[in-house]
Image (cartoon, rainbow, N blue to C red; front, side):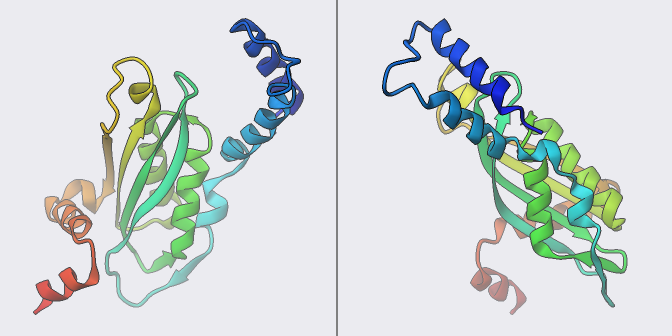
Length: 196
């Protein structure tokens, strides 16, 4: 659980460290605000993907499932600065599926922790593989990192893309090709045109 007392003390020290007056009107309540905010943005520290992926439903056919453009916000563990973007998750069921919102909640579990994008991608793919036991899983994250855009090299607009796969998506290139093909399709009209 987030220790709000320690966070408030740390923020006061940080503000003093940069030469601010922690008693001035604009900053007086900042330690409290940041402590509450950190409770929200690091909520994944107390969450477990198993809770979201444990309730599954039987299906008769095992067709690919893709949930794309899942928005996420996370904090880089190296600088405690935000990175944010979209997650795309595909899996090939093995007789059972999970509610679609549960995949988005799984992304949130790992995003709401001090994190690096590379590790988050692997955590998501392994959680889906472990708890759904599908024939295969593929995950792609696309994100902009403020530790690269606001400081350091200062290159706004640059995106980092990470991909991880397991099972049939790792073993058979045709499933990876299908994943990327489905990501490229941005609306139903495009799907329908391909089918005719």
